[in-house]
Image 1 (cartoon, rainbow, N blue to C red):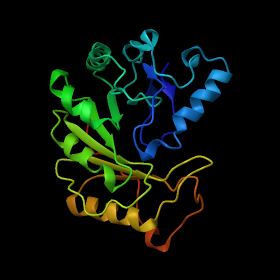
Image 2: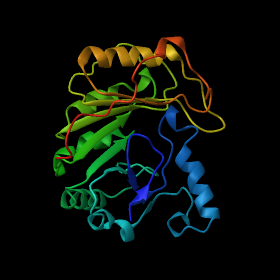
Image 3: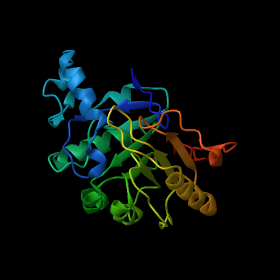
Image 4: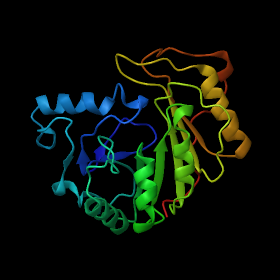
Length: 239
């Protein structure tokens, strides 16, 4: 069976790769690192190495067995485009995603440079979405790298949003996610940062999904947000 998840913008997760290493500011309080340590302590086989990067051939074909169409977040516990993941394994993952074309696969990375470098060597079925994480305006260059990809659907995750984004070029972007940082050491998110991104999405008619305020202020309920339908998903079929 698929692994259900509490991540609001997807339905299931699939982790042929687990473990990662920190690459930018958004990685500081990584939720996946905390979870991996917990799963290792529980004796979960795929987390025997904790948060060290590991490839899992044993789960590679799982999506083919899942017959109910669903949105699947690829490598919620890692980054498919980590420099230590062999390109041959990335190709294997893409082969499975293309075989299981009744699902929608959401591939999200902070390593936009490697993604951009190898993208034209991969088979981007219409059911494979490409996304990058942009946690502050220091990383908006990832959006330009995303924009040039051959994926039909391109999305941005501004999560954890730890700084203002400012005016940003969203041309060619199909979906935007925004969220605060979770966990015990969560950094602050400012309401105005969220409003600014939301307004730019409205202007360009881009579906916008506000996920959470995060652990810094779970009860945040600013007046500027009242009465606004935040949770929007792309109005698109899986294929």
